[in-house]
Amino acid sequence: MENLFYKQFAKNIGIIGLTNAIISLKGIILLPFLTKYLGIYDYGVWAQIMVTVSLFTPIVTLGLPFSLVRFLAGEKNKKEIREGIYSVLFLIFAIGLIISLFLIIFSRPVSSFLGSEYDLIIILAFLVLFECLNSVFLNVLRAFQEIKKYSFFIIFQNFGGIGLVAIAIILNYGLLGAVFSLLIINLIIFLILGGMIIKGAGFELPNFSRIKQYLSFGVPTIPGNLGFWVVQSSDRYLIGYFLGITSVGYYAAGYTLGNILMLFLTPLSFLLTPVLSKLYDENKINEVKICLSYSLKYFLMVAIPSVFGLSVLARQLLTILSTTEIASQGHLITILITISILFFGGRVVTSQILALVKKTNISSTIWISAAIVNFGLNFIFIPHFGILGAAITTLIAFTLAFSLTLFYSSRYFTFSIDRRFILKSVFASTIMSLIIIRLNATSIIELIIAIIIGILIYAITLFILKGVNKEEIKFFGELFKIRNSRTIQ
Image (cartoon, rainbow, N blue to C red):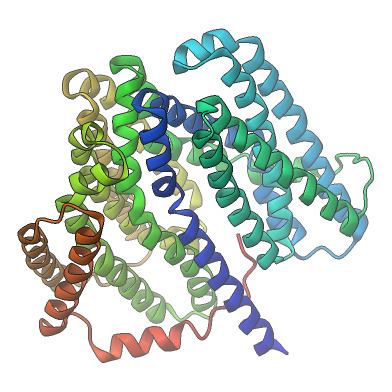
């Protein structure tokens, strides 16, 4: 019975990993529609709108959806389940309504700040509200390990949104229609999930008896989340302020392409926590260290050549996905962002140590520190170096976050970093890049062929250099057979 549970859990982890990997492509898929049909200015406004939604979501939700995952996962009493769900839902609705009314009341100055139409802020106000409410329902599914349903709705939310946005743009409804499409898809999900939750758990008005417990768990996560938001997203606001909305569009396009490296990182970050938690709880520290070492190695094995590949192909890819003008302005942004994600990936692996020893407060402090550095430097770099300055400060912030995480995590225990492999990977990536440059691909077909050839050259070179041995492959094969019974968090 226990093995069956472990097997199901491992399957759930795989589904989530695949889901997160798929939705990482959302920005790339939408990029041609937004840039080619709407133009660079409207694409800049779109980027500002998305950043604004991501800013208000952690503020409105107060970490409460994550609290539901933590406290409802083992709950059997339906009355307590209803109390938990509806107390969180009603509180978030109240806060979200206040934020939405604030955006509506101050819609004219907000629209002026974002460089958008007045009507767009009205839609934004409701989009923020339903994004936050849906996060409650989605995390209820996570709490009760309804992983297939959770993944379905996440994919439906993202790709349904892509479909409606594309249709709205093609039918000439413009940016207003594109953002309204996101509101429609969120409203549909809210109605469906709300109906499912009421049908499954029933409905009753909450008395908020456990909300203090939920807030004490969720609120401390807000500073870290906001710190990460500042590092990842606040530069769009500052670029808009100093350089104008068009520059935001150039920057966002280059950032979106560089951010594709998250495709490799997201499944790994989701898989590591349960595996390492089981090993650590069983006091298998040596295996934890080996797992961390190999995890970093395998991330770097795909991330390093991706950095090289995207760097040499950034201009061609952006030209195909957007416009020649955007490519000329944004390709250097892509290069710097890919390097930033490389350091972020290293930070994700090393931060597992802090999670294992329950020092997540250190992680929050690190992100706050990185945010302060990033925000402060942007005031200096953006006016002097333009959008390139914003990408440089992002790289500095992610490098700082990685360095601080490595420093503090080493106080508890360390793991081996295969520096020889890194050199081999860099060498193989260099050979790959030289060949890709030589191919000089310009069309989509030529680009695909060049990428395939590049992957083969890298793999063959790394194999010849003996970058990966049989023991490492065997270890990982055995390791992920024990993906464990921890609650998803």
